[in-house]
Length: 597
Image (cartoon, rainbow, N blue to C red; front, side):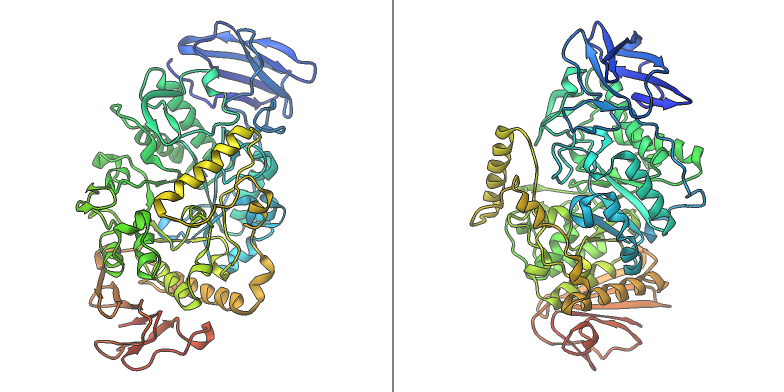
Protein backbone atom coordinates (compact mmCIF):
# COMPACT_ATOMS: atom_id res chain seq x y z
CA UNK A 1 0.00 0.00 0.00
CA UNK A 2 1.29 3.44 -0.90
CA UNK A 3 -1.33 5.25 1.20
CA UNK A 4 -3.84 4.39 3.86
CA UNK A 5 -7.54 4.42 3.18
CA UNK A 6 -8.42 6.32 6.30
CA UNK A 7 -7.87 9.67 7.97
CA UNK A 8 -4.29 10.21 9.20
CA UNK A 9 -3.62 11.05 12.83
CA UNK A 10 -5.55 9.69 15.81
CA UNK A 11 -9.05 8.30 15.27
CA UNK A 12 -11.26 7.36 18.24
CA UNK A 13 -13.86 4.66 17.59
CA UNK A 14 -15.54 2.09 19.84
CA UNK A 15 -13.27 2.90 22.77
CA UNK A 16 -10.05 2.41 20.81
CA UNK A 17 -7.65 4.79 19.17
CA UNK A 18 -6.05 3.98 15.82
CA UNK A 19 -2.92 5.97 15.08
CA UNK A 20 -1.61 6.53 11.56
CA UNK A 21 1.49 8.61 10.96
CA UNK A 22 3.51 9.28 7.81
CA UNK A 23 7.16 9.86 8.72
CA UNK A 24 9.25 8.19 5.99
CA UNK A 25 12.67 9.37 7.22
CA UNK A 26 12.20 8.25 10.81
CA UNK A 27 13.88 5.10 12.04
CA UNK A 28 11.66 5.03 15.12
CA UNK A 29 8.31 6.62 15.92
CA UNK A 30 6.31 6.77 19.14
CA UNK A 31 3.34 8.62 20.57
CA UNK A 32 3.74 10.35 23.92
CA UNK A 33 0.37 10.80 25.57
CA UNK A 34 -1.48 11.67 28.73
CA UNK A 35 -0.40 13.93 31.56
CA UNK A 36 2.20 11.35 32.60
CA UNK A 37 3.81 11.36 29.13
CA UNK A 38 3.34 7.64 28.64
CA UNK A 39 5.10 6.28 25.55
CA UNK A 40 3.67 3.90 22.93
CA UNK A 41 5.92 2.86 20.05
CA UNK A 42 4.39 2.65 16.59
CA UNK A 43 4.86 -0.24 14.16
CA UNK A 44 6.66 0.57 10.94
CA UNK A 45 4.72 -0.23 7.75
CA UNK A 46 5.43 0.28 4.06
CA UNK A 47 6.04 3.62 2.33
CA UNK A 48 6.91 5.52 5.45
CA UNK A 49 3.75 4.82 7.47
CA UNK A 50 3.63 4.01 11.17
CA UNK A 51 0.68 2.51 13.00
CA UNK A 52 -0.61 1.52 16.43
CA UNK A 53 -3.86 0.79 18.24
CA UNK A 54 -4.54 1.46 21.90
CA UNK A 55 -7.41 1.80 24.35
CA UNK A 56 -5.40 4.21 26.50
CA UNK A 57 -5.93 7.27 24.30
CA UNK A 58 -9.45 8.62 24.74
CA UNK A 59 -11.42 11.67 23.70
CA UNK A 60 -9.56 14.61 25.25
CA UNK A 61 -6.21 12.85 25.77
CA UNK A 62 -3.22 15.13 24.99
CA UNK A 63 -0.48 13.63 22.85
CA UNK A 64 2.60 14.32 20.74
CA UNK A 65 4.72 12.28 18.36
CA UNK A 66 8.38 11.50 19.02
CA UNK A 67 10.61 10.69 16.05
CA UNK A 68 14.04 9.14 16.67
CA UNK A 69 14.14 10.42 20.26
CA UNK A 70 13.94 14.03 19.10
CA UNK A 71 11.77 16.67 20.77
CA UNK A 72 8.05 15.76 20.86
CA UNK A 73 5.99 17.38 18.10
CA UNK A 74 2.28 18.03 17.61
CA UNK A 75 0.43 15.80 15.16
CA UNK A 76 0.32 17.25 11.60
CA UNK A 77 -3.19 15.73 11.36
CA UNK A 78 -4.26 16.98 14.80
CA UNK A 79 -7.97 17.61 15.23
CA UNK A 80 -7.53 20.00 18.13
CA UNK A 81 -4.76 22.24 19.47
CA UNK A 82 -6.13 23.51 22.80
CA UNK A 83 -2.89 25.33 23.63
CA UNK A 84 -2.21 26.73 20.18
CA UNK A 85 0.10 25.80 17.33
CA UNK A 86 3.10 24.94 19.53
CA UNK A 87 1.22 22.93 22.16
CA UNK A 88 0.25 19.28 22.40
CA UNK A 89 -2.43 17.83 20.16
CA UNK A 90 -5.62 16.49 21.70
CA UNK A 91 -7.49 13.37 20.61
CA UNK A 92 -11.09 13.99 19.56
CA UNK A 93 -13.97 11.57 19.13
CA UNK A 94 -15.83 12.98 16.12
CA UNK A 95 -19.05 11.16 17.00
CA UNK A 96 -21.86 13.74 17.06
CA UNK A 97 -25.59 13.46 17.68
CA UNK A 98 -26.71 14.98 14.38
CA UNK A 99 -30.24 16.26 13.83
CA UNK A 100 -29.87 16.92 10.09
CA UNK A 101 -30.70 13.47 8.70
CA UNK A 102 -33.34 15.02 6.41
CA UNK A 103 -31.02 17.77 5.19
CA UNK A 104 -29.93 17.99 1.57
CA UNK A 105 -27.99 20.96 0.28
CA UNK A 106 -29.63 22.54 -2.77
CA UNK A 107 -28.01 22.79 -6.20
CA UNK A 108 -25.43 25.56 -6.55
CA UNK A 109 -27.89 27.49 -8.74
CA UNK A 110 -29.97 28.07 -5.59
CA UNK A 111 -27.05 29.27 -3.49
CA UNK A 112 -27.01 32.88 -2.35
CA UNK A 113 -23.75 33.00 -0.42
CA UNK A 114 -22.79 35.13 2.57
CA UNK A 115 -19.05 35.19 3.31
CA UNK A 116 -18.05 35.80 6.90
CA UNK A 117 -15.04 35.79 9.20
CA UNK A 118 -15.71 34.03 12.50
CA UNK A 119 -13.63 36.35 14.68
CA UNK A 120 -15.24 39.60 13.51
CA UNK A 121 -18.75 38.55 12.49
CA UNK A 122 -20.70 37.76 15.64
CA UNK A 123 -20.59 38.35 19.38
CA UNK A 124 -17.70 36.60 21.08
CA UNK A 125 -15.81 36.10 17.82
CA UNK A 126 -16.58 32.36 17.78
CA UNK A 127 -18.97 29.79 16.34
CA UNK A 128 -21.56 30.54 19.01
CA UNK A 129 -21.49 34.14 17.82
CA UNK A 130 -22.31 33.01 14.28
CA UNK A 131 -25.13 30.81 15.55
CA UNK A 132 -26.58 33.79 17.43
CA UNK A 133 -26.98 35.65 14.11
CA UNK A 134 -28.41 32.87 11.95
CA UNK A 135 -31.93 34.29 12.15
CA UNK A 136 -30.61 37.55 10.68
CA UNK A 137 -29.17 35.62 7.74
CA UNK A 138 -32.37 33.64 7.22
CA UNK A 139 -34.41 36.84 7.22
CA UNK A 140 -31.94 38.41 4.79
CA UNK A 141 -32.64 35.55 2.41
CA UNK A 142 -29.20 34.04 1.88
CA UNK A 143 -29.09 30.27 1.50
CA UNK A 144 -25.45 29.51 2.36
CA UNK A 145 -22.75 30.88 4.60
CA UNK A 146 -19.11 30.71 3.59
CA UNK A 147 -16.77 30.65 6.58
CA UNK A 148 -13.26 31.95 6.08
CA UNK A 149 -10.57 29.39 7.04
CA UNK A 150 -10.73 27.95 10.53
CA UNK A 151 -7.62 25.72 10.48
CA UNK A 152 -5.56 26.35 13.63
CA UNK A 153 -3.41 29.47 13.31
CA UNK A 154 -1.04 31.27 15.71
CA UNK A 155 -2.76 33.33 18.39
CA UNK A 156 -6.42 34.34 18.21
CA UNK A 157 -6.47 36.97 15.46
CA UNK A 158 -5.97 35.94 11.86
CA UNK A 159 -7.80 35.83 8.55
CA UNK A 160 -7.14 32.08 8.59
CA UNK A 161 -4.86 31.74 5.58
CA UNK A 162 -1.85 31.23 7.88
CA UNK A 163 -3.23 27.96 9.25
CA UNK A 164 -0.74 25.20 10.03
CA UNK A 165 -3.04 22.37 11.12
CA UNK A 166 -5.49 21.74 8.26
CA UNK A 167 -7.47 19.18 10.28
CA UNK A 168 -7.63 21.18 13.53
CA UNK A 169 -10.32 23.82 13.98
CA UNK A 170 -9.16 27.02 15.69
CA UNK A 171 -9.35 26.56 19.46
CA UNK A 172 -10.53 30.11 20.16
CA UNK A 173 -13.48 29.62 17.77
CA UNK A 174 -14.75 26.50 19.54
CA UNK A 175 -12.78 23.67 17.95
CA UNK A 176 -14.11 20.98 15.66
CA UNK A 177 -16.95 20.05 18.00
CA UNK A 178 -18.07 23.66 18.02
CA UNK A 179 -18.04 23.64 14.22
CA UNK A 180 -20.15 20.47 14.14
CA UNK A 181 -22.71 22.17 16.37
CA UNK A 182 -22.78 25.25 14.13
CA UNK A 183 -23.24 23.21 10.95
CA UNK A 184 -26.11 21.28 12.56
CA UNK A 185 -27.74 24.58 13.58
CA UNK A 186 -27.33 25.98 10.06
CA UNK A 187 -28.98 22.95 8.49
CA UNK A 188 -31.87 23.27 10.93
CA UNK A 189 -32.48 26.72 9.45
CA UNK A 190 -32.03 25.59 5.83
CA UNK A 191 -28.63 27.20 5.48
CA UNK A 192 -25.82 25.41 3.66
CA UNK A 193 -22.28 25.71 4.95
CA UNK A 194 -19.22 26.35 2.79
CA UNK A 195 -15.83 26.10 4.44
CA UNK A 196 -12.83 27.94 3.04
CA UNK A 197 -9.75 25.69 3.02
CA UNK A 198 -6.14 26.29 2.02
CA UNK A 199 -4.41 23.51 0.10
CA UNK A 200 -1.85 25.65 -1.72
CA UNK A 201 0.41 26.57 1.22
CA UNK A 202 0.78 26.37 4.99
CA UNK A 203 1.57 29.21 7.37
CA UNK A 204 5.09 29.79 8.72
CA UNK A 205 4.57 29.75 12.49
CA UNK A 206 3.89 26.36 14.05
CA UNK A 207 4.64 24.60 10.77
CA UNK A 208 6.23 21.27 11.75
CA UNK A 209 5.53 19.43 8.50
CA UNK A 210 9.15 19.43 7.37
CA UNK A 211 10.08 17.34 10.42
CA UNK A 212 7.79 14.55 9.29
CA UNK A 213 8.25 14.14 5.55
CA UNK A 214 8.37 15.62 2.07
CA UNK A 215 5.26 17.75 2.35
CA UNK A 216 7.01 20.43 0.28
CA UNK A 217 9.01 20.41 -2.95
CA UNK A 218 11.55 22.85 -4.33
CA UNK A 219 10.47 21.96 -7.89
CA UNK A 220 8.14 24.96 -7.78
CA UNK A 221 8.07 28.27 -5.98
CA UNK A 222 4.93 30.01 -4.80
CA UNK A 223 4.40 33.41 -3.12
CA UNK A 224 4.78 31.50 0.15
CA UNK A 225 7.99 29.62 -0.71
CA UNK A 226 8.39 25.98 -1.73
CA UNK A 227 5.20 24.48 -3.09
CA UNK A 228 3.25 21.75 -1.36
CA UNK A 229 4.35 18.45 -2.85
CA UNK A 230 1.59 17.19 -5.12
CA UNK A 231 3.74 15.57 -7.82
CA UNK A 232 7.31 15.03 -6.53
CA UNK A 233 8.84 12.09 -4.64
CA UNK A 234 6.64 11.13 -1.70
CA UNK A 235 3.61 12.96 -3.06
CA UNK A 236 1.24 9.97 -2.71
CA UNK A 237 1.00 10.47 1.04
CA UNK A 238 0.71 14.25 0.72
CA UNK A 239 -2.14 13.98 -1.77
CA UNK A 240 -3.81 11.45 0.51
CA UNK A 241 -3.42 13.82 3.47
CA UNK A 242 -5.37 16.61 1.75
CA UNK A 243 -7.96 14.33 0.16
CA UNK A 244 -8.76 12.82 3.55
CA UNK A 245 -9.04 16.33 4.94
CA UNK A 246 -11.76 17.14 2.39
CA UNK A 247 -13.58 13.90 3.08
CA UNK A 248 -13.49 14.61 6.83
CA UNK A 249 -15.19 17.98 6.41
CA UNK A 250 -17.95 16.40 4.36
CA UNK A 251 -18.36 13.10 6.19
CA UNK A 252 -17.68 13.98 9.84
CA UNK A 253 -18.54 17.68 10.02
CA UNK A 254 -21.37 17.67 7.44
CA UNK A 255 -20.00 20.70 5.63
CA UNK A 256 -21.82 21.08 2.30
CA UNK A 257 -19.09 22.63 0.15
CA UNK A 258 -15.48 23.69 0.22
CA UNK A 259 -14.07 26.88 -1.22
CA UNK A 260 -10.44 26.10 -2.03
CA UNK A 261 -8.10 29.05 -1.86
CA UNK A 262 -5.93 29.98 -4.88
CA UNK A 263 -5.83 26.60 -6.59
CA UNK A 264 -3.66 28.11 -9.34
CA UNK A 265 -0.87 27.79 -6.75
CA UNK A 266 -1.38 24.03 -6.50
CA UNK A 267 1.50 22.86 -8.66
CA UNK A 268 0.91 19.46 -10.20
CA UNK A 269 2.21 18.26 -13.54
CA UNK A 270 1.40 14.62 -12.84
CA UNK A 271 -0.75 12.45 -15.07
CA UNK A 272 -3.82 13.08 -12.91
CA UNK A 273 -4.06 16.50 -11.36
CA UNK A 274 -4.67 16.54 -7.61
CA UNK A 275 -8.00 18.33 -8.09
CA UNK A 276 -9.24 15.67 -10.50
CA UNK A 277 -8.33 12.92 -8.02
CA UNK A 278 -10.02 14.88 -5.25
CA UNK A 279 -13.18 15.17 -7.34
CA UNK A 280 -13.21 11.40 -7.92
CA UNK A 281 -12.96 10.73 -4.18
CA UNK A 282 -15.70 13.23 -3.38
CA UNK A 283 -17.95 11.64 -6.00
CA UNK A 284 -17.36 8.27 -4.32
CA UNK A 285 -18.33 9.77 -0.96
CA UNK A 286 -21.46 11.29 -2.50
CA UNK A 287 -22.46 7.84 -3.71
CA UNK A 288 -21.88 6.35 -0.27
CA UNK A 289 -23.75 9.02 1.71
CA UNK A 290 -26.45 9.96 -0.78
CA UNK A 291 -25.57 13.60 -0.19
CA UNK A 292 -24.17 16.10 -2.66
CA UNK A 293 -21.04 18.01 -1.74
CA UNK A 294 -19.69 20.86 -3.85
CA UNK A 295 -16.12 21.86 -4.64
CA UNK A 296 -15.63 25.57 -5.33
CA UNK A 297 -12.27 27.06 -6.26
CA UNK A 298 -10.59 30.41 -6.34
CA UNK A 299 -8.54 30.48 -9.55
CA UNK A 300 -7.14 33.48 -11.41
CA UNK A 301 -6.08 31.64 -14.58
CA UNK A 302 -9.37 32.03 -16.53
CA UNK A 303 -8.92 28.41 -17.52
CA UNK A 304 -12.22 26.52 -17.89
CA UNK A 305 -10.32 23.24 -17.51
CA UNK A 306 -10.65 23.71 -13.74
CA UNK A 307 -14.46 23.62 -13.91
CA UNK A 308 -14.91 21.34 -16.90
CA UNK A 309 -16.14 17.87 -16.00
CA UNK A 310 -13.86 14.89 -15.61
CA UNK A 311 -15.57 13.39 -18.66
CA UNK A 312 -14.50 16.46 -20.64
CA UNK A 313 -10.91 16.06 -19.43
CA UNK A 314 -11.29 18.83 -16.88
CA UNK A 315 -10.58 18.83 -13.16
CA UNK A 316 -14.26 18.58 -12.30
CA UNK A 317 -14.60 21.48 -9.88
CA UNK A 318 -18.22 22.52 -9.48
CA UNK A 319 -17.74 26.28 -9.51
CA UNK A 320 -15.20 29.08 -9.22
CA UNK A 321 -14.98 32.65 -8.02
CA UNK A 322 -14.57 35.13 -10.88
CA UNK A 323 -12.73 38.18 -9.67
CA UNK A 324 -12.93 39.77 -13.11
CA UNK A 325 -16.65 40.44 -12.71
CA UNK A 326 -15.79 42.28 -9.51
CA UNK A 327 -12.97 44.24 -11.13
CA UNK A 328 -15.11 45.32 -14.09
CA UNK A 329 -17.99 46.26 -11.77
CA UNK A 330 -15.79 48.35 -9.48
CA UNK A 331 -14.28 50.28 -12.38
CA UNK A 332 -17.77 50.77 -13.87
CA UNK A 333 -18.90 52.20 -10.54
CA UNK A 334 -16.05 54.73 -10.58
CA UNK A 335 -13.46 52.87 -8.53
CA UNK A 336 -9.76 53.49 -9.00
CA UNK A 337 -7.80 51.77 -11.76
CA UNK A 338 -4.52 51.01 -10.03
CA UNK A 339 -2.81 47.61 -9.84
CA UNK A 340 -4.81 44.81 -11.45
CA UNK A 341 -7.76 47.17 -11.97
CA UNK A 342 -5.71 48.83 -14.71
CA UNK A 343 -6.71 46.00 -17.06
CA UNK A 344 -10.38 46.97 -16.91
CA UNK A 345 -12.20 49.68 -18.84
CA UNK A 346 -15.51 49.69 -17.04
CA UNK A 347 -18.91 49.13 -18.53
CA UNK A 348 -17.77 47.39 -21.73
CA UNK A 349 -15.84 44.83 -19.68
CA UNK A 350 -18.78 44.35 -17.32
CA UNK A 351 -20.97 43.68 -20.33
CA UNK A 352 -18.49 41.06 -21.48
CA UNK A 353 -18.49 39.50 -18.01
CA UNK A 354 -22.26 39.03 -18.26
CA UNK A 355 -21.97 37.51 -21.72
CA UNK A 356 -18.76 35.48 -21.44
CA UNK A 357 -18.03 35.04 -17.70
CA UNK A 358 -14.33 35.70 -18.25
CA UNK A 359 -13.40 39.21 -19.38
CA UNK A 360 -10.00 38.02 -20.55
CA UNK A 361 -10.51 34.86 -22.58
CA UNK A 362 -7.61 34.95 -24.99
CA UNK A 363 -6.86 38.60 -25.66
CA UNK A 364 -3.84 40.63 -24.58
CA UNK A 365 -3.72 41.70 -20.93
CA UNK A 366 -1.63 44.85 -20.42
CA UNK A 367 -1.26 44.25 -16.67
CA UNK A 368 0.08 40.74 -17.29
CA UNK A 369 1.86 41.72 -20.52
CA UNK A 370 0.65 38.62 -22.32
CA UNK A 371 -2.38 37.07 -23.97
CA UNK A 372 -4.46 35.53 -21.23
CA UNK A 373 -7.38 33.22 -20.56
CA UNK A 374 -9.62 30.77 -22.40
CA UNK A 375 -13.27 30.78 -23.38
CA UNK A 376 -15.90 29.40 -21.01
CA UNK A 377 -18.49 28.91 -23.73
CA UNK A 378 -19.89 25.61 -22.48
CA UNK A 379 -19.87 26.34 -18.75
CA UNK A 380 -23.15 27.02 -17.00
CA UNK A 381 -24.04 30.05 -14.92
CA UNK A 382 -24.02 28.12 -11.66
CA UNK A 383 -20.30 27.46 -12.16
CA UNK A 384 -19.41 31.11 -11.53
CA UNK A 385 -19.64 33.03 -8.25
CA UNK A 386 -19.76 36.83 -8.43
CA UNK A 387 -19.64 39.62 -5.86
CA UNK A 388 -19.11 43.33 -5.41
CA UNK A 389 -16.92 42.79 -2.35
CA UNK A 390 -15.21 39.91 -0.56
CA UNK A 391 -12.54 39.50 2.10
CA UNK A 392 -9.73 39.88 -0.45
CA UNK A 393 -11.08 42.87 -2.31
CA UNK A 394 -11.84 44.73 0.92
CA UNK A 395 -9.10 43.54 3.24
CA UNK A 396 -6.36 43.63 0.65
CA UNK A 397 -6.86 47.34 0.20
CA UNK A 398 -4.25 49.13 2.27
CA UNK A 399 -6.84 50.60 4.64
CA UNK A 400 -9.48 47.89 4.29
CA UNK A 401 -12.25 50.23 3.15
CA UNK A 402 -15.61 48.69 2.34
CA UNK A 403 -17.89 49.85 -0.47
CA UNK A 404 -19.87 51.80 2.13
CA UNK A 405 -16.88 54.13 2.54
CA UNK A 406 -15.82 54.26 -1.11
CA UNK A 407 -19.20 54.72 -2.80
CA UNK A 408 -22.41 56.60 -2.05
CA UNK A 409 -25.63 54.80 -1.17
CA UNK A 410 -27.04 54.85 -4.71
CA UNK A 411 -23.86 53.31 -6.14
CA UNK A 412 -23.81 50.63 -3.46
CA UNK A 413 -27.35 49.67 -4.41
CA UNK A 414 -26.43 49.67 -8.09
CA UNK A 415 -23.54 47.27 -7.47
CA UNK A 416 -25.83 45.01 -5.44
CA UNK A 417 -28.26 44.92 -8.35
CA UNK A 418 -25.46 44.10 -10.78
CA UNK A 419 -24.56 41.05 -8.68
CA UNK A 420 -28.02 39.81 -7.70
CA UNK A 421 -29.53 40.21 -11.17
CA UNK A 422 -26.65 38.33 -12.79
CA UNK A 423 -26.95 34.84 -14.33
CA UNK A 424 -24.35 33.66 -11.82
CA UNK A 425 -24.26 32.57 -8.16
CA UNK A 426 -24.19 35.75 -6.03
CA UNK A 427 -22.11 36.24 -2.91
CA UNK A 428 -22.28 38.97 -0.25
CA UNK A 429 -19.55 39.90 2.18
CA UNK A 430 -20.57 40.18 5.82
CA UNK A 431 -22.08 43.56 6.71
CA UNK A 432 -22.58 44.56 3.09
CA UNK A 433 -26.33 44.14 3.47
CA UNK A 434 -26.60 47.09 5.86
CA UNK A 435 -23.63 49.14 4.62
CA UNK A 436 -21.35 48.36 7.57
CA UNK A 437 -18.94 51.32 7.87
CA UNK A 438 -16.21 49.55 9.85
CA UNK A 439 -13.27 48.58 7.69
CA UNK A 440 -12.19 44.98 7.30
CA UNK A 441 -8.42 45.13 7.68
CA UNK A 442 -5.68 42.55 7.53
CA UNK A 443 -4.77 41.23 10.98
CA UNK A 444 -2.56 38.52 12.50
CA UNK A 445 -1.32 37.56 15.96
CA UNK A 446 2.05 35.90 15.40
CA UNK A 447 4.07 35.20 18.53
CA UNK A 448 7.40 35.37 16.68
CA UNK A 449 8.58 39.04 16.71
CA UNK A 450 10.70 38.64 13.58
CA UNK A 451 7.80 37.11 11.69
CA UNK A 452 5.48 39.85 12.88
CA UNK A 453 7.87 42.50 11.59
CA UNK A 454 8.22 40.66 8.29
CA UNK A 455 4.44 40.74 7.88
CA UNK A 456 4.40 44.49 8.51
CA UNK A 457 7.09 45.08 5.89
CA UNK A 458 5.36 42.73 3.45
CA UNK A 459 2.11 44.68 3.69
CA UNK A 460 3.93 47.90 2.97
CA UNK A 461 5.69 46.45 -0.07
CA UNK A 462 2.46 44.96 -1.36
CA UNK A 463 0.85 48.35 -1.80
CA UNK A 464 3.72 49.87 -3.71
CA UNK A 465 2.20 48.31 -6.84
CA UNK A 466 -0.98 50.28 -6.15
CA UNK A 467 0.98 53.51 -5.54
CA UNK A 468 -0.88 53.87 -2.25
CA UNK A 469 0.00 56.77 0.01
CA UNK A 470 0.25 56.53 3.78
CA UNK A 471 0.83 53.58 6.07
CA UNK A 472 -1.08 50.34 6.32
CA UNK A 473 -2.67 49.63 9.72
CA UNK A 474 -0.45 47.48 11.92
CA UNK A 475 -1.70 43.90 11.32
CA UNK A 476 -0.40 42.84 14.74
CA UNK A 477 -2.33 45.50 16.68
CA UNK A 478 -5.38 44.39 18.64
CA UNK A 479 -7.07 47.62 17.53
CA UNK A 480 -6.80 46.58 13.89
CA UNK A 481 -8.76 43.43 14.70
CA UNK A 482 -11.32 45.11 16.98
CA UNK A 483 -11.95 47.88 14.47
CA UNK A 484 -12.79 45.25 11.85
CA UNK A 485 -15.75 43.84 13.78
CA UNK A 486 -19.34 44.29 12.63
CA UNK A 487 -21.51 46.81 14.46
CA UNK A 488 -24.80 45.01 14.79
CA UNK A 489 -26.51 47.91 16.53
CA UNK A 490 -26.50 49.78 13.19
CA UNK A 491 -28.86 47.41 11.38
CA UNK A 492 -31.95 49.26 12.61
CA UNK A 493 -30.66 52.81 12.16
CA UNK A 494 -31.05 55.32 9.31
CA UNK A 495 -29.57 54.40 5.95
CA UNK A 496 -28.31 51.11 7.37
CA UNK A 497 -31.89 49.96 8.00
CA UNK A 498 -32.92 51.19 4.54
CA UNK A 499 -30.10 49.24 2.92
CA UNK A 500 -30.99 46.09 4.85
CA UNK A 501 -34.61 46.31 3.67
CA UNK A 502 -33.36 46.91 0.13
CA UNK A 503 -31.19 43.77 0.17
CA UNK A 504 -34.00 41.66 1.62
CA UNK A 505 -36.39 42.74 -1.12
CA UNK A 506 -33.88 42.29 -3.92
CA UNK A 507 -32.85 38.82 -2.73
CA UNK A 508 -36.51 37.84 -2.35
CA UNK A 509 -37.16 38.90 -5.95
CA UNK A 510 -34.26 36.85 -7.24
CA UNK A 511 -35.42 33.78 -5.31
CA UNK A 512 -39.06 33.88 -6.39
CA UNK A 513 -38.86 35.09 -10.01
CA UNK A 514 -38.69 32.07 -12.34
CA UNK A 515 -36.32 33.75 -14.80
CA UNK A 516 -33.99 35.37 -12.30
CA UNK A 517 -33.64 32.16 -10.33
CA UNK A 518 -32.66 30.18 -13.43
CA UNK A 519 -28.99 30.67 -14.24
CA UNK A 520 -29.17 30.09 -17.99
CA UNK A 521 -26.31 31.77 -19.83
CA UNK A 522 -27.76 30.67 -23.19
CA UNK A 523 -30.66 33.11 -22.82
CA UNK A 524 -28.62 35.93 -21.30
CA UNK A 525 -27.56 38.89 -23.41
CA UNK A 526 -25.90 42.12 -22.32
CA UNK A 527 -25.24 45.27 -24.33
CA UNK A 528 -24.09 48.72 -23.34
CA UNK A 529 -23.97 52.35 -24.38
CA UNK A 530 -20.58 53.56 -23.23
CA UNK A 531 -21.37 57.22 -23.91
CA UNK A 532 -24.42 57.17 -21.63
CA UNK A 533 -22.86 54.58 -19.28
CA UNK A 534 -25.95 52.40 -19.62
CA UNK A 535 -25.86 48.62 -19.45
CA UNK A 536 -28.79 46.53 -20.72
CA UNK A 537 -29.06 42.96 -19.43
CA UNK A 538 -31.70 40.59 -20.79
CA UNK A 539 -32.44 37.39 -18.90
CA UNK A 540 -34.78 35.04 -20.77
CA UNK A 541 -35.95 34.44 -24.34
CA UNK A 542 -38.48 35.95 -26.76
CA UNK A 543 -41.37 34.27 -24.95
CA UNK A 544 -40.57 35.55 -21.46
CA UNK A 545 -37.74 37.79 -20.35
CA UNK A 546 -36.60 40.07 -17.59
CA UNK A 547 -34.81 43.25 -18.52
CA UNK A 548 -32.29 44.96 -16.25
CA UNK A 549 -31.15 48.47 -17.05
CA UNK A 550 -28.20 49.88 -15.11
CA UNK A 551 -27.16 53.51 -15.21
CA UNK A 552 -23.56 53.92 -14.05
CA UNK A 553 -23.46 57.64 -14.90
CA UNK A 554 -23.99 60.56 -12.54
CA UNK A 555 -26.76 61.92 -14.79
CA UNK A 556 -30.34 61.00 -15.49
CA UNK A 557 -30.28 59.22 -18.83
CA UNK A 558 -32.77 58.95 -21.67
CA UNK A 559 -33.65 55.38 -22.58
CA UNK A 560 -34.05 54.22 -26.20
CA UNK A 561 -37.75 53.65 -25.54
CA UNK A 562 -40.20 53.86 -22.65
CA UNK A 563 -40.29 50.83 -20.37
CA UNK A 564 -42.76 48.37 -21.86
CA UNK A 565 -43.62 46.02 -19.05
CA UNK A 566 -44.18 45.58 -15.34
CA UNK A 567 -41.52 47.22 -13.16
CA UNK A 568 -40.34 44.70 -10.60
CA UNK A 569 -37.67 46.75 -8.85
CA UNK A 570 -36.31 50.28 -9.05
CA UNK A 571 -33.33 51.08 -6.85
CA UNK A 572 -34.09 54.81 -7.08
CA UNK A 573 -37.45 54.39 -5.38
CA UNK A 574 -37.81 56.63 -2.34
CA UNK A 575 -38.55 53.63 -0.12
CA UNK A 576 -34.92 52.62 -0.71
CA UNK A 577 -33.67 56.11 0.09
CA UNK A 578 -33.45 57.06 -3.59
CA UNK A 579 -34.41 60.29 -5.40
CA UNK A 580 -37.62 58.74 -6.74
CA UNK A 581 -38.55 55.95 -9.13
CA UNK A 582 -37.68 56.46 -12.76
CA UNK A 583 -40.53 57.55 -15.02
CA UNK A 584 -41.31 57.28 -18.71
CA UNK A 585 -38.22 56.77 -20.79
CA UNK A 586 -35.66 58.04 -18.26
CA UNK A 587 -33.57 56.35 -15.61
CA UNK A 588 -32.19 57.99 -12.50
CA UNK A 589 -28.41 58.34 -12.05
CA UNK A 590 -26.56 55.53 -10.32
CA UNK A 591 -29.58 53.24 -10.36
CA UNK A 592 -31.03 50.11 -11.90
CA UNK A 593 -34.48 48.98 -12.98
CA UNK A 594 -35.68 45.40 -13.29
CA UNK A 595 -38.85 44.81 -15.30
CA UNK A 596 -40.77 42.10 -17.12
CA UNK A 597 -40.80 42.61 -20.86
